[in-house]
Amino acid sequence: MNILILGSGGREHAFAKKISESNKITNLYVAPGNAGTATVAKNLPINPTDFLKVKETVLQHEISMVVVGPEAPLVEGVHDFFLADNELKKIPVIGPKKDGALLEGSKDFSKQFMEKHNIPTARYQSFTKDTLKEGFAFLETLNPPFVLKADGLAAGKGVLILNELEEAKTELEEMLSNQKFGEASSTVVIEEFLDGIELSVFVLTDGKSYKILPSAKDYKRIGEGDTGLNTGGMGAISPVPFADEAFLQKVEERVVKPTVIGLQKDGIDYRGFVFIGLMNVDGNPQVIEYNVRMGDPETEVVLPRIQSDLVDLFEGVANQTLESKSYEVTNQIATTVMLVSGGYPEAYEKGKEITGFDSVNDSIVFHAGTTEKDGKVVSNGGRVMAVTSFGDSIEEALEKSYASIDEISFEKMNYRKDIGFDLL
Ligand code: AMP
Ligand code: GLY
Image (cartoon, rainbow, N blue to C red; front, side, top):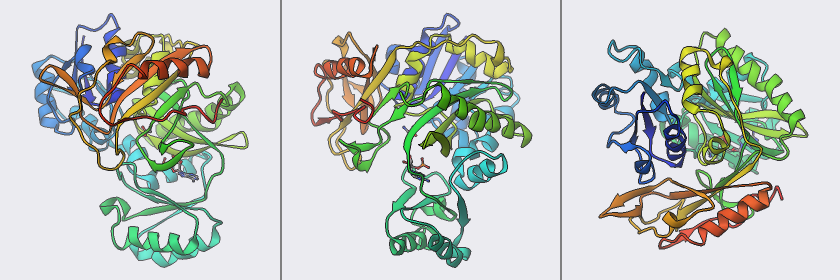
């Protein structure tokens, strides 16, 4: 069959590599892709949220399945667009429709969903500019730090964690009355601070049954020791050592099952990934957020550990036969370290030639922000490459990633040298 992947990051390269290994694949396309996806698939210069262009491409290349990488096309309704079109409606889309994508597209919706289905999460209330005063009053009932979340998508920047009450009030007003995050902060969720260690659990569901994919821990801050600005993610490790069988059992019973059953009860036919951001609070999972896609760079450690045919699993999602599909994961530990452009997550330069990645043997080099120019691979984004390795221990896998990184270079290349520091 012919498959089209939408997206262009390290996540999409990891999808493309895994899907290209399936013997069910005839032609694989990525739109728009990067220099890495071009080695395992054909890139098509299309914007994933330009649905008419996506349609044209799907018909032209006789695509029989679309896998959606990022959240934007899902939140904007790419799956609904397919279902509403006579020529596209039989082509399965891996990723939820607009109604399910609201789990990520609206924090207020996702909190209401969790409350309704008794899924453990921080106590919260939502406010708009008309209820600003009530928002101040709610803040006064909470202990610091204060957590303010823009309801809508804000490019990963919409969450503020503040230590001072006065500062929290000022920021709440900025968000609600002065549109600090534009339309995204016209509603703000204020919630209790959860004190614990974060991890992510990924679920693939066909709306009836589910497979729990490997857990992963992401390192979001730019600086070593988890300091400095937030990024899209500077590295990841899978599995998470403290997510042992007992903990994962709690995650399945208290979070995964009620989520899948809750979607059914609410009439939301959800077929795709659910990314569950969790806080481990004294051994008990609390949900921080849902995303309706895989994580990046978590995908770069989760997918390489899955030994089953991903296309077979996706067919199960499309046909609602996921329950009968074989699903196996290696016990080997995977680590990934992200190479970023100097200056990221603030201003950075692009177009720097990248060398040495081709001769790496002990790791898988997933391209993120790369492109080809005059026969050379050059940087084309803040996060440039993710270097993934396996090992019997976190130390062994990390040693391989760092040794491979020594072979790779581009001007102003930066990376964290302490991925996994808190787990060793
Ligand atoms: P979110 O976009 O909801 O994942 O929030 C971004 C980050 O803020 C999370 O990854 C957490 O590190 C942090 N965070 C969000 N909500 C809370 C909370 N209730 N308590 C503590 N930290 C939080
Ligand atoms: N690495 C975090 C995310 O993909 O949202």
